[in-house]
Image (cartoon, rainbow over all chains, first blue to last red; front, side, top):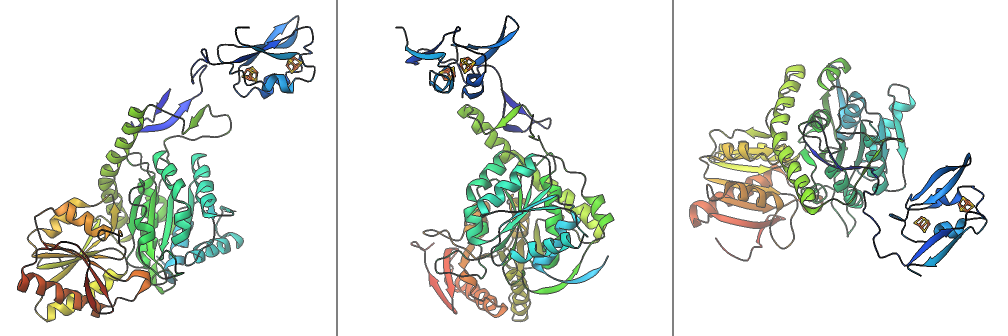
Length: 94
Length: 398
Ligand code: SF4
Ligand code: SF4
């Protein structure tokens, strides 16, 4: 979304919006899979995801991560940082 | 209004204080350094309240000033020569993000070989960047134009950065009497800072993302529109400055005896003072010279220039820099604006601080009239005047 100042000047500004950079589509080769039984809800993955594509959801009164595959790039950072190895990277379509 | 004896650099320092600048980001380089040394002194003594950020390079000096400006502060930085070149990338960021700010460029030759004396290659390298450019003739103008720069830059019709140039050493280190306006007068002239947007922690906008090519081009077109609008904003602000201080800056072109002149010197900066003395001497010998000094280079005051040039026999454009492989940049601007209306000669001189006195201007004036009257030369794009010798350095004769 572009922003114009009240005097009509065009500005090189944009406002953050969901999916502003577009959906990932088909080019992701590996995707992160969350094993909920190993997850302790520390949210380190949420903190580190460079695409901001891990959401926080309430499960039984606890904050838990949920990966949004529309925008996940499959970089594997979440799998690397997870202290309990609750996330594994699996072949796309496999 | 107190009259003080000030160097060009210190005249700028007083203007910065009077403009109530909040953040100064700086890296030292000769001959600019004394501006900020004075500001440091003012802050230390408690007479001026501003933050100074000492950075590790000029790239960072402009970037830090830019960041503070985006955050909402009135900012200042100054540089010269190699320092300006090191800032070059950030110059374009500031302008195209429409961020008002003011910088002073104390002009100095660019090495190698090392040289600390004035020519205009540094400030002329800013011509295409989207900054408004003004050039002082004397120390009074260095102060006045700096104040004017803040007012014009922060005007919503403009919202572009402004650089004010003054000649290294000739102005920067030479003291002359300067009228320093009262704070209350400057406060009336300069409203609270206005800017198109601010970005602070928590602001939900980001700057500089990728946009469509069409939007990019439209943004640049908007900058050009604002540049043209700035011609009138400068006139309006210059008129009001005159009303408040008795020194009007309504004219972007300072015309000295243009009206009845047959021939005009055209140029920028302090050496136009020598051109004015030469015009007097030439008039004593029957050659009616005048001087059209461009106070502003960007926006280029084409309307005032055409008015000054109208009916003249010859314009002699004096460049203190050269676009290597072609001509002096001012010559290109002036001849492009006048078209075939009037003969135009381009003379390059004074590169690397080589002294050009009024006597040199007298020789150049006589030489030019001879070429025109005796040889009928109508266009002479580049003659490089050096040590009294006229060197023709253009591939075609016109
Ligand atoms: S794979 Fe990368 S993009 Fe996808 S959820 Fe993990 S950290 Fe985020
Ligand atoms: S880092 Fe691992 S354990 Fe922590 S919330 Fe994410 S998936 Fe669960």
